[in-house]
Image (tube, rainbow over the protein chains, first blue to last red):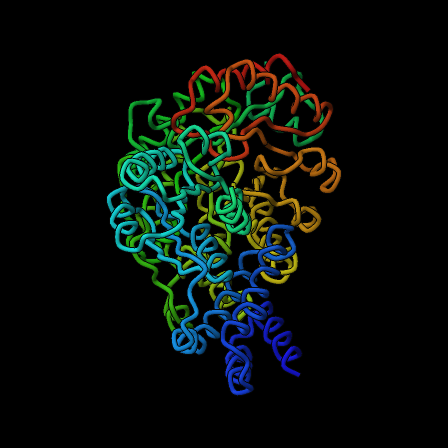
Length: 211
Length: 336
């Protein structure tokens, strides 16, 4: 019965049905399903499936965005219960589009994917200076920093951020991505990881944790 | 000797000339190459045309264009657009948030709005200078892209699934201006109208078919009725859209570097002129020899077919001059 409810919740998140998701999340709590079980076995599961479909070109940006919206609806209900039961985030990531670049859709998708797998996401927005990244790292002590750029003219600013963060906080892993960015470029600028799309970013983060 | 417009018409007709036509998208590169900023290039047609003409001469390109940034029509609709020296102009505020906003949105007179008039004047200046011997590519924003420019990309992407009426209402409105703007540029002398609908690569084929395909067909038929050709430009990987794009009727289909050119040819057939598709980041970063070889390979793939050599998207501002020259060299030495 409870498994069926969780499966249904997962399915509704995948379909982006926010209202149904809110109802089912509340019902799951009312049925005394542990909040972390709802998070892991319905929400994270759903976003992982959507992310995999995105990677295989079976889901696109609209599907990702509405699934994320539905997941956020569930989290609004779930988060107070997670706090009560002292469930921890799986980690923290600071994300932002680098200085001079106003494009944010790719960065937003990365945020969605990390939130979807249980990370706390600190989104600094677009046109973010190296100093702002440093401030955020010092304030939040993240596991990862994700840098995005859509333009060849702004991707060069990724190196400035990496140089600054590595000089002060070498322990933070930095992942870069964006249309003009390549694995080769990521290595050149001393990034720890390169993600060629939003769904891959989570896998890259996981591999960095185990490496 | 045939002029460049005649050579283009030969390609359209399938009577292929001895050389491969060469037309990379130039904006920021062209501006800096002529000693101007991107902001100056986007803000004033005199600068835009002068920069393109210098590039036309120095790189022996086969067409010139009027493309600059996505916000010509957006500004004409009333959104505040700010020019910045070394970057794409910024739309400072979204002006459509509700269906009432859409109802209240007035289609601009493209001859009176500053930024649309600027592009129309650019077309006239090209005609005065080139005497009709070089194809001139005008530019309009496609309906889905313009909807995003006015209402926000994330918002429109979600409304496609959550509030289809909103998107349809907005796209119906922007279609009117798209066609007005296309006609004005054709009347001013443009031979080809480029439709930039970059965001389409981010939606499924199903959503493209439901929301955009018929609108693309309508604009393309309209432009054809005005006597001009159509180039459709969608940034990114559009492999999943190719079966639909086959049916929309454009004359030239730009392909970004993620698309397999041969696969695209198989799907869209022989009538469409394919344009592309070397990775612009490679054009910036690789050597002349590598660029030449990559272009040669593309040209040989498209031998005896309707094809224009270009990068997958805009040539980047930091591209070495010799690399762009290598592209031109490949197109001359490896004709169709």
